[in-house]
Amino acid sequence: MIDKKIITIAHAMLNSRKIALLTGAGISTESGIPDFRSKKDGLWNRFDSNFLSRDFLYKNPEKFYELALEMFTLLKKNSKVKPNKAHYILSQMEKENMINSVITQNIDGLHKLAGSKNVYEVHGSLRKSYCVFCKNEYSFFLLYRKILKRQIPPLCPKCGNVLRTSVILFGDELKEEFFEASKEVLDSDLLIVVGSSLEVGPVNTLPSLAKKFIIINKDKTYFDDKALVVLNENASTALSAIYDLIKKNK
Ligand code: NAD
Image (cartoon, rainbow, N blue to C red; front, top):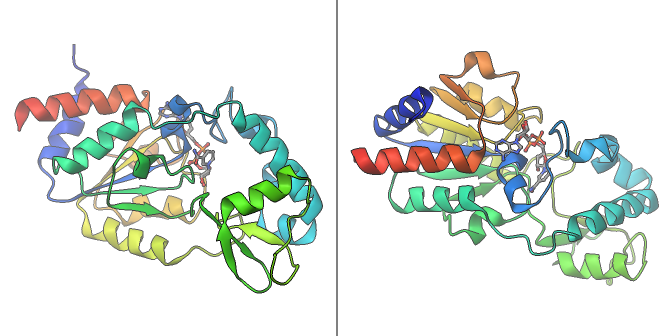
């Protein structure tokens, strides 16, 4: 039996001119990457959330990289990280003009790997690193190789200052991509949030810019009471059901 909420979501999508998706760590848990705030497996059950901040990196680079290495070693256990069904469905939905864009807080690059084209990576990605002093850019792998060789903190080959990831840390300013994503939300008539607790700002201001929004998330969020529909379901299960229903009615 098709859930009534799936019907409402499919109906809202069929009646929208332009649709943006906002995804969070929850869409990648089915790829084996833990999120931050899931009650059982969230990373904040094992790490202090303050460590992933700009302040912490600039004041305690050694400790920051000790903890970062520990987190990477844990994530490396799932070294064959691949997009899951939810990423592929969103890419297919874009191809079939059911949605227009994906705004993601994730840094794992899985939306692009699954074939989504119009992707806003508002928290950056794990592809690059740069020097905090001379700002010279390097691949992320250069930084990663250095920490694996225990050069902690990893140092810039050019000027010898500390290297950092291009991923946005707590306390960093967001880049232009976030403002472009905000415009995308303003220009859309529906925003669908998938797999995000909506606890991280300023990304969690995006729903308030939307004409209307829907939330698909396993747990409750502080924005539930303002959403058109809240579906507490697995991302891939929900998105498959929505895709199938839209296909039938298009
Ligand atoms: P979050 O950890 O705060 O919230 C994730 C939410 O997803 C939770 O509320 C949980 O109930 C839900 N969830 C978990 N698995 C799900 C599933 N299979 N289907 C549907 N919902 C599911 O994550 P957030 O809101 O994205 O914000 C935290 C920050 O975490 C972001 O800035 C992001 O950059 C960073 N992060 C990214 C990754 C990644 O790139 N994969 C992983 C961990 C954290």
